[in-house]
Image 1 (cartoon, helix red, strand yellow):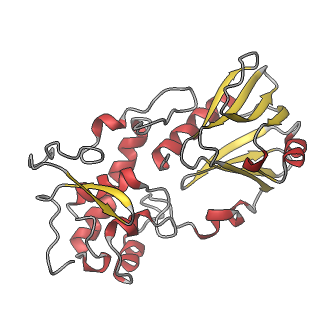
Image 2 (image 1 turned 30 degrees about the vertical axis):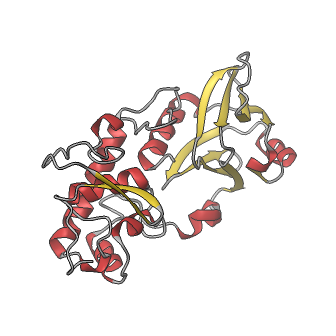
Length: 279
């Protein structure tokens, strides 16, 4: 699933490709993907100009003219691409925005899990998961005070804590594993057992990991592509994710894989120790 760095990379690419373009027509080939129903969705977007494209957590928010916005969630394998209009549709191109420059903005989704919701601008935070989304993982919004209180007031395993979008927006399976490795925290460690020093390091690791991943244009493990059709490169810098059996970059101990919060989880048993005191 695209996480914050991948969605931010897509956003930045789309800004350069389609911001300022006007939508001439919308073709919805999989009606369940859009809200309201397909005909109304297409009618509302006709002749609207794409003014800005924002991101909140893992969601893209398109702001159009006339105070209309669209919340887009890529889910597992959704991706946007800008192509010439005469290019034949891919069988997984489900929503096509025909632009005034002769190109199409096409949404492709192999699993059909992605969703697009139109809403008046200013009401987008009332859509789906945005209603309860936590702070963005930036120094300004994810403060040390907030993170300390959130961790100390809960007794949850750390992997589950980091995946909870109502606590911190944007982290998913890949970056949760990487952040915990950077912080030397076991994924099954209880959140309320972290020391002040560990919380500070965890916070700094979140910022460092996401910034590096954005700079590398995201991680491509399976199918992620950016808006220009290119893969990310951060998979070449991963320390533990999908590296089970390979040596830890820090201590050379083989990386292990377990299930935590029903998610495949990777860690170093030497660097990330679980003791009776913090279990």
